[in-house]
Length: 449
Image 1 (cartoon, rainbow, N blue to C red):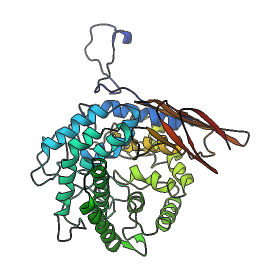
Image 2: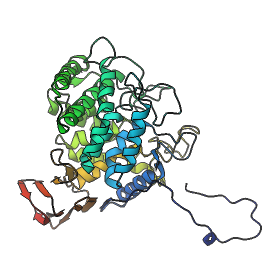
Image 3: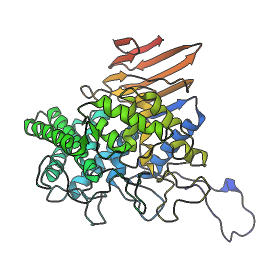
Image 4: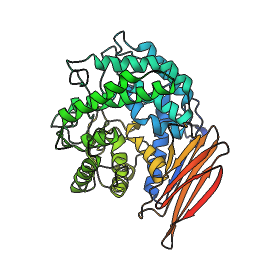
C-alpha cells in the first residue's frame, strides 16, 4: 500500500504512533543495482518493492485488488530477475510443487497456481512457467533436486502441446492471452497484434529446448526431444517467417524470434527490430510476452545502444515514464496514468504489477554484465560481459550467492572506462570486454579500456 486513511479518530493523533509492517515470504535480499541515472535507480527500487508486495506465499500478479493470484505468466517473465533480487529458491520450490499438484491429467497447466478459478488454462507463455521456472532455479541456485522433482511436470507440459492440432511441430490451436496488453493491440482488445500462434509455437520451441537441457543435466536420453525441437524450429520458420523476417511484423515477434534462436539469419531480424524501434522514436510497443526479451534481443545482436535508449526513455511508453509519474512499484499498463493525467481505466489498472520489472535481469546481465554459466550453474562459473553506455557515468551490481558475493562495476572517467569484477572463493570467471577475453580465479580483477 501507499496510503492509509484514518476516519472518526477522537482528537488529534501523531503519525509516529503508527507502524507500517511490510509482509512478504521470508526471502533474503541478495541483489543490488545502482547507476548514475537517479530515475533508473528509482525504477530498480520500484522493482524491489513490487516483488516484496507480490511474493507472499505464491507469486501473485498484484496484491491490492480482487485477484492476488499466482498467475503463471507473470511468474515466468520475472523469475530470473526475482531470483537475483532475493533468494527465491524455497519460495519457487513450494510454488512449483503446487503446480505439479494442480497439473491436469492431460498435462495441461492452469492459468494460476494454486488454481481456485477452475476456468481452463494452457495459454502459451503462461503455462510455459512449468518449464521456464525450474530451469531458472537450476541456473541461479544449481538446484538439481528441484529440476528432478519437476522434470515429469515439464515433460508432460511439452507433451500436452505436442498433442495439440494436426502437426506435432506447430502449436496453432487453442485460446491464448497473446502479447497481453501490447501497445499495438487492435481497438477494443487487450491483446497485442502479434500472431498468437507464432507466440505459441515460439514458446513451444523454447520449452522443448529447456526440457532437453534439463534432461541432459539429469542424465536422461533426450534424443526424441532433440529431434522434436529441430522439427518445431523448421515448422516455425516455414509457417511464421517470410524472407527471414516474422510475417507478424511486430517488435514482440522479432524479439521472440531472436531470443529463442528461431531465425535462420539472426542479424537480419535484429537489423529489422532495431529499425522498428528507431522509427517508433526509440519507444516500445511490447506487452507481457515481448517486453522481457526485447532489450536482450537487441543487446545480444549488436544493438545495445538502442536497448539502452529504451531503458532510458522518459516519455510514454517507457519504464521511466511511470517513475516520473510518481510510481513506487511497477505498473500493469504502460499508460496506467496517461500523459494528460487520466487513468487507462478504473477497473483493470494495477499500480503494483511486477511483470514489467523483468527489465531488472537486463540491468544485472547486460548493464553490469553478471551472467550465469549453464554448464556450471549457481554462479560456480561467472561470465562477466558488461556493455557500458556513454549515457551512464557508472553502474554497479552485486548478487549474493552460495559462494559469496559476485560483483561488477564500471566507471567512465577521462575518456577511459574502468571495470572491477569480484569473484568469490570457490568460483571462476570469464571476463569478456572489448579486445579482452580472460579466464580468472577468485579475487578482485580490474581493467581499464
